[in-house]
Length: 490
Image 1 (cartoon, rainbow, N blue to C red):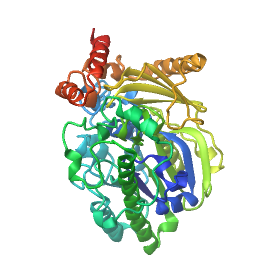
Image 2: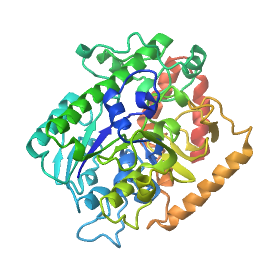
Image 3: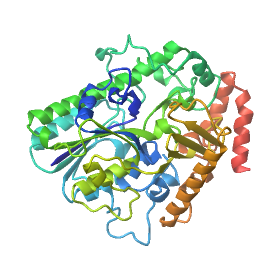
Image 4: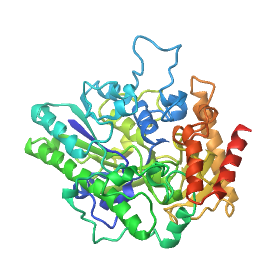
């Protein structure tokens, strides 16, 4: 058997048509989903980019593997010096998969984040060279060439990483806009947009994409706007994101056609997923991945087994971590899941077309904010230790069945649910730290350094952003930010 792992950066599932989106963004992905299993509630344990892939490849939550930030002491795997031998990280996902498969990656990720552990276990590594700024038409031809040369060989695992939904949106203008006459998501109203406009923080309507609004960088990209200053601007912004998904899907279609041309499609297991989602107005963040919430940490997960194992066109709505899928792949392939992992295989239930999953998940973000959240039943409770220069309360509670875009904080209305979630969070933290070789939770390492890399109180960009707030008539936010700073650092 062969395995094709399609990794589309920054892809939120509810913007795929197979997940119910009103725009037809993903015809090729939809076809794969119709032939396999679509997981409705798959979450990365840690977001965004670096922490997510660190968790997936290590099989461990960030609290244990240590890589939870995009810079500083907590941006790398934590080495257990007492166990560091001639080789290390031998329980990583790809190292284990190499027991049965010839492993190949086509991705710039390792260089982009100086995360060279990412290449551990791959037999061939193709760095596409632009640090995540390349379009799919600069990545997929390398994959097609590899398939032409080696695709007919048996037992390979091919990872293809494309970035087109990530800002800046740079699909070639020659591709046009297939969504020009299609309205944006209806949940975004003018009243909701105004609330995000009359707000502050990186990612807000005046500072979308996490660039703090400090320059006119996005003016270089015709599909983008510098501010979400109207519903029309919001539509252009969403069109840019959706065009990125559509373009990635188009390029992935070329890979799927190549498998069919080579006669190996019916012997190839296909997994389609992402490193994180993308808030597009939720929690006052546009075009970025700054929170430990339902939108940022939930990812698409589609698994199509060539022999139909798991089912065809089946939807599994149970709660899973993304590395649970990795553990399931190991068992499916006859490889032992390391005891060191947090990831759990559910292969037997998958094989019997049953949903299993977990009672609850704890998900985290410590690169743009310091948040941990508990996800269970229809609910998510988000606890902020550092708000990422935003005006979030310490605790937020949302009913995702009734409010999937997290508009109404119910923490005060349902204190018993907040208490339940806090108890689960405390339970999870204690269990994870018992299994850790370190005495300090890396979240507190990030806090001591000034906060998350992209929103640190001790970074020069913080002072620059205070000036930005003055320039945009948001002086009222200055005192609140300074108060939050003092609450953390006395």
